[in-house]
Amino acid sequence: MPSVVVVGLQWGDEGKGKVTDYLASEAGLVVRYQGGNNAGHTVVVGDQEFKLHLVPSGILYPGKLCVLGNGVVINPGVLLKELAGLKERGVDVSGIRISDRAHVIMPYHPCLDQLDEASREVGKIGTTGRGIGPAYVDKYARYDAIRICDLIDPDIFKERITEIVRIKNMVIEKIYGKKGFDVAAIIDEYSRYAEEIRPMVTDTSVLVDRAIRNGEKVLFEGAQGTLLDIDHGTYPFVSSSSPSAGGACTGAGVGPTRIDKVVGIIKAYSTRVGEGPFPTELPEEQVSLLRDGRGREYGVTTGRPRRCGWFDGVIAEYSVRVNGVSDLAVMKLDVLDQIETLKICTGYRYRNSILKEFPASLKVLAECRPVYEEYSGWLKDTTGCREWSDLPQQAQDYLKRISELAGAPISMVSVGWKRDETITIQPIW
Ligand code: GDP
Ligand code: IMO
Ligand code: MG
Image (tube, rainbow, N blue to C red; front, side, top):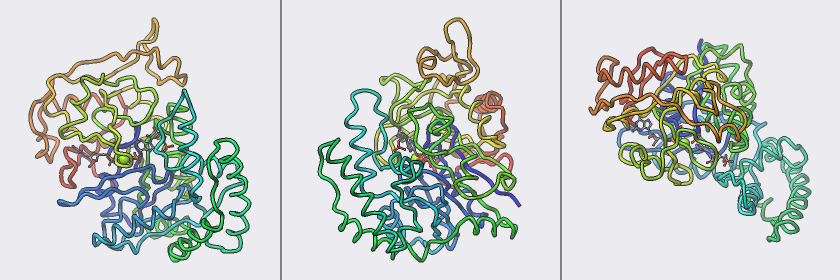
């Protein structure tokens, strides 16, 4: 029975929430495997829009098991608020399960994230300020991390947090000259969270294994995107986790032999939030072409305007390769409906050569100039298209070129934010 990974192929915000929700109707289990509340996944159901940060995008189907895997970093206050907000809107959140091995974002993590960014004169990453980087640093450094299983054990939690806050306060007070944290207040606040989340905590790897053995469909929902991956992204302008498909194995506790398909989510153009290289970026005076109108390219988590640019075939090929993408879902085609001339980047001119492989060095990348092919736009509304044959010929040609450059077949095309504004070419399940 299929298990499918949904992975972003660009710099995040590709539309993973829409596709996860779309595929989740048939899934037994939906699993977030990395990242935290830096993510903002939008799902539109009828006239209601949901912006999910930690909760998996399968939650809108009543009773669906939705797992936060061990690879996620969880801010319990944020999670509980998100769940309360969903409940208020009538959403059944009884299916939420939290890995006992997931790491906890503590109040000093966002604080250190923001202090670190603010103190830098050069090389700011433009993080979401949610404490994601510092939480993963503590996870890998090992000394100062709190896992969910520690949080819900009052003795262990008190013992560990007392020492950790002493160390964190040394950094906050002596290096940044700011006021440190009161450990008693943290214990009080987080002990309340611990009691609220305790019923949801379990070994979620067992749930995933059981579902697969029972022949249920399992959906792994990545956050961020391949170019924000700590290993494969435009380092150091990346997030601190592994959004790429391999991260689903470590972040959910499932072996690679159990994954059947990898659905690469890719916009029909490109966007990025925060700092870092973006070869096909449009200059500010042209950006509204993609950002405004149906693009609505403003960050779900921070509200920042997204940087926008043309489709980058070098990145598409790179991301298909590092994720082993079996199917592409091309999103937001409708945003291009009224543009007369479209451009697709097919390579990078670097000094006297044309690069087809995405370079590791940011210095090389800074010298790369995109080589473009131009396509005439279709100048027709595609939001009503439900079959491949409904799409204007120019749109079909544009999509065929995307698939050819990426080196993977297109199984879905999205022509609007609503559930039904979707063309299925090859069913994923
Ligand atoms: P995610 O982080 O990958 O889940 O994506 P975001 O939710 O951050 O950003 C995607 C945005 O595009 C959201 O506002 C979606 O509602 C919207 N969206 C998704 N698919 C389409 C589409 O095909 N057309 C248009 N116009 N908007 C879409
Ligand atoms: P979804 O899941 C777009 C970006 C931030 C910043 C960099 C590092 O909605 O696609 P972090 O706070 O993670 O340390 O910030 O990563 N970033 C995202 N950009 N979509 C996201 O998530 C992102 N999550 C982080 O803007 O450049
Ligand atoms: Mg997003």
